Image (cartoon, rainbow, N blue to C red; front, side, top):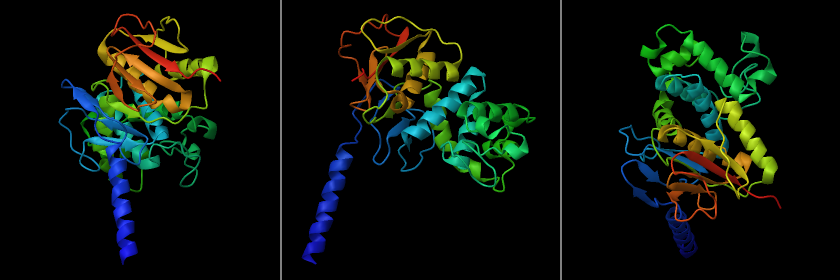
Length: 302
């Protein structure tokens, strides 16, 4: 009995230590939630002060791993470049949540593949096409736009018109998570996407080139800017909303592309902290006028 008590005490102490490492850092202003990832997940997407229904543990935030968040950011970017309305983005993310948990699955029911579990036999494309998240997202949006009156349907009904699932109500349970994520990834909430990134395997100029190529694949034509003393990329932006779209996308893809730091305006995210915080010093980086450029620094080569 005494041994069991000691074990319980140790477990409680361990949980307390872990929770203390994942607390809210602090909050600046009305629209800048500065958080580090929630316990058990690599990334967190926060709703800010938006009036949204609480999800999961009631915190108003969504916990994901880096693969899930990267895929969600790509789906959202594809939709934004196509000028898909907010509701359409929610439909897409809710669908991908239900079909694959936002994981690019190599297989599924019958011949289903990818984020949306699209089937080659049903005319969605060749297997290698459907396995590309960008192709899959574009195919989903194209099908959604063909649904008459989808904008006025419930999210689950619009998704069902595209997917023809055996479980037509299943998409509705992901609406709240998807609303939070769309607000953040669309740039409506600032500093709302944060990830704790492991040491990157991708480094140096090659990582920077791959990051730039991935940006163009998701966002199409992007305006780049020169930044001295930096291995990475810089993007020109016209207004804060588009800046936060890029900034959040960069954090979402940080693990994949070896991103060490993202700066925008007077805020920065760092891989070492996993969180957004005010910029105290730029480490010699001349990022240009605050608010006009988003800068991503990748890890230098060995």
